[in-house]
Image 1 (tube, one colour):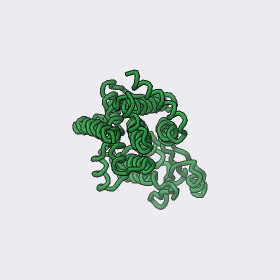
Image 2 (image 1 turned 180 degrees about the vertical axis):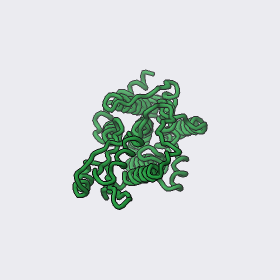
Image 3 (image 1 turned 45 degrees about the vertical axis):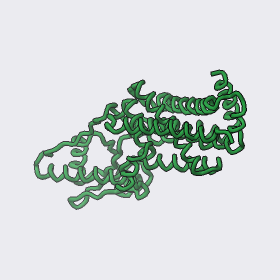
Image 4 (image 1 turned 30 degrees about the vertical axis):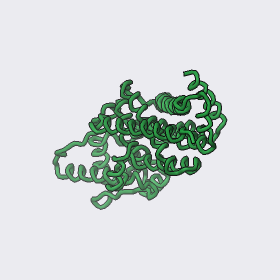
Length: 350
């Protein structure tokens, strides 16, 4: 244990002196949590609807007030004023009652939001038709959260995924970066000639990156709660399991990458590309609904998907599928075996 602690302390000093390592494994995950928090965090903003009073607008105002109370209504003296308000984004969209029909005003720059506004306009138009015919709506739409956390937003789903990725990424760079560089410079094999056992070298480097990954994930967790008011229901046992699976699997993934790319720079670059690809395809950065069907199938096979889903279940955001736990356990076992194999190949004497 004393020898492993000595390696650990030496690796801490090396780690703190490497600004690139610090940025990739510590500051980048924290920056992403803050960035996504400012984009998607906080309370959901109400939709603002602009209307022009006069003519047949009284019926429209009454329908919107009675059947769509969640909308924030603003009135404007004329169509031109409403068009300018939509263009300046004072309101999200506008409706004008003209010649017995509704004209929808949208800002062309809001590509992602406009389909939702169009759907709202169709619902309002349908309610107007029913009200003019003297018929009450047969179905009333209500938004009900069916997950484990009431009021969960997309940011609530992002944070557990970023926590898993922080640990996974630290494990990948532990092997694909640090250990690969030590192997290329002959440091690992020179250690074989000393009384220092091989497991102490691997344990010291691996433990450091595991601590870094866990600390970064914990900072992500507390930042999301302190800055953006996110609330989680934590299952400590499951959280530790998926954190360990992320760390061990990441180190095994880094070992597999290093065996393919012999030079440490190439191995680190390949590992970074692999991790980033998994992030985009595993529903961590963007919802699965935004991906084509073929990429969704691919994303659900990747280990990052199962680790993110497991973290979400451990934090009480969702109910995980039955396949998530065994898939994460298999990834952890693969990581442990690949890491030990890499250590055996790197530390064997000439």
